[in-house]
Length: 184
Image (cartoon, rainbow, N blue to C red; front, side, top):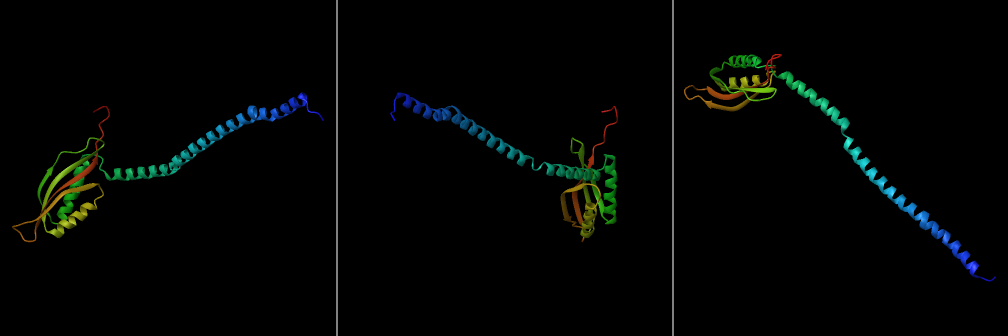
């Protein structure tokens, strides 16, 4: 068999078919496939990040419900207006009288708070024995309304043995009176 130009051209053409297929079909398809795989990996990362971000949403709904219950409970402990502060103050005086404590001074201070809730601080001075004062503090702590005791000083009375004088600020928290309809 003699190999001539025709046979060499035929062999070159036969070898060029796979080379052309690789250059024109397989290589671009491989590059396109690699680009698509990179996009898929990127989108999978984003999807995983989204899953992690939204994993706590059910927990947040439960937490919001729990916090709303807590807010409702605290609001139920607040008097619904400045007029009910007098009722609470009366309860405090009854507790003081039960402990046989003597009132030396009572001064209301400026109301604090601009929003929906207010704080009425009242500076009080009481005198009596220490056990009675301690019982009074426990009774005030058990009141059904929200109160806070600030700036407590307790001193021994010089003139009377066994008698102490206390000075403290009792803050009573309440919900601001809602304005009358049509008024400001």
